[in-house]
Amino acid sequence: MESSLVKDNPLLLPLNKEKTIYDGFITVQERDFRLRILLPPDRQVKQARLHCCWQLKHLLHGYEHIVKQRQQQSPDLVTFILELKTVLEVGLKSRHECRSIPPPQYYAQLISEMETLGWGKLLFIDTEFRTLRLKAEDSSRRQHILNIKLKSKHPVEAPECSADLPVPLAMTWTPQSTLEQLHSQFLLLLESLTEFWDVLDEIDSKTWILEPEKPSRSDTMRRIAIGNNTSIKVEVDPRHPKMLPECCLLGAEHVVTPLRNKLNANMQLWNPDSSVLHNLRDVLEIEFPSPATHEKSSFSVECGICYSYRLEDAIPDQVCNDPRCGQPFHQACLYEWLRALPSSRQSFNIVFGECPYCSKPITVKMAAQKS
Image 1 (cartoon, helix red, strand yellow):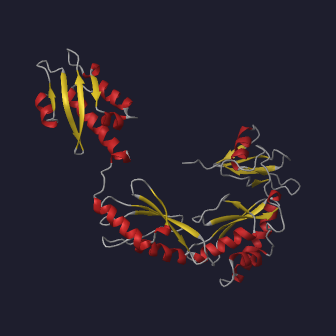
Image 2 (cartoon, one colour):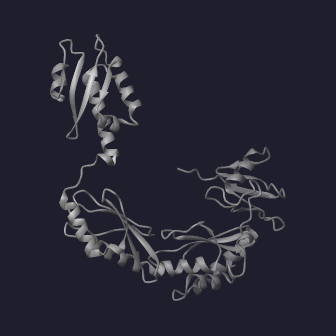
Image 3 (cartoon, helix red, strand yellow):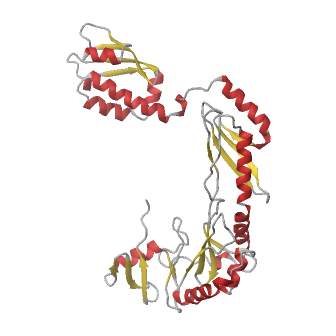
């Protein structure tokens, strides 16, 4: 055991002949940490006391219970030191404070690139000069942000980039690339998506959007209010935004069925040269309620069970099919309500029961489990 301990930790040495006191350094990822170990006379690791340098204490903060567990389970000091090193490796990877400081040329390169790009485009830079946020404007004057995470070997290593986009952000990078070239690529990508955002901006401004509550630039779906607890969910293709989108009508069957029939019958009238909203009006033969003509409260009907409109991210989208009722419910609320009634029955993932308001037949699919 002693030979193995010395071989793996040449800087950690016994201070007495009983070998109950060890002092020195353990090395993890080319970093040395001062450690003193006091063993009891029987040299049982379970009863050992550890004295760590402040760097080691800082690194082990949050991992104390794991170290204690490893100490209790290790049969000897060699095994425990090996386990301790494993914990330290995990800590070094997860704590950005322990990252190696980039060489001076890294900062010189970054400043040079920002001078070329223009400091006015920089929205944020962290204290480590690793994370940047650059602003960009498309031809419709929409503001966008490009998030950049530089590697310590910049520009040899490609940076990590992210943005609020409906398509993957694929950037080309070589060791000769610069932040200005990265920003130019981002602007080109924004221009390719301008028509897509124009389509959704028109829908957002001229209709009542039920979902998402606060659309982001990456959202491709809109649930548009029609009226009478009825709505249409459209999924716009970012690459072909003016083509017929994927549509799903939601609401009571007696209201949805005529609209679905019109959609199927008039689909061939879709004109790619017109806006999506104009085409939807023509195909469905309706006028969408808008902020200019209706209050949103007209469509924000509360769930008949929990008496709230928004339940986490869900809104009431299960509607009683009886024309005299038409009460909406959250899918999760209605499912739990019906499942608790002795008179309800279930077939696969569908529950059949009675409407809590009018007692007419109503069905609901089992709520999808969140992963």
